[in-house]
Picture 1: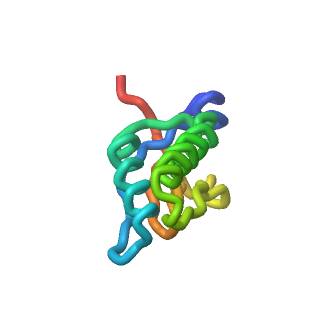
Picture 2 (picture 1 turned 90 degrees about the horizontal axis):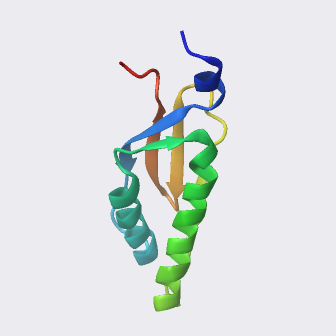
Length: 105
């Protein structure tokens, strides 16, 4: 049985990612950075907006180095709260998040 805090302020585990070939260069670079930064990490629900902002700031940094690159949309899915899954979208690529069920002590 989960506590009120666990139910209302869940943790998300970044367990996997989806990528495809032929993506724009900035999208590839951003996803590579995000995988190194976040894959196999826990992120609190209240921290998800900060993570999106951090990825967007990294995108701005990479874009300032080469303004010919095409920027991509960065956001997380908000509609799948009840399913225990979320996706952090970086263009058409994504980091896959799973709600942490419990902590074994």
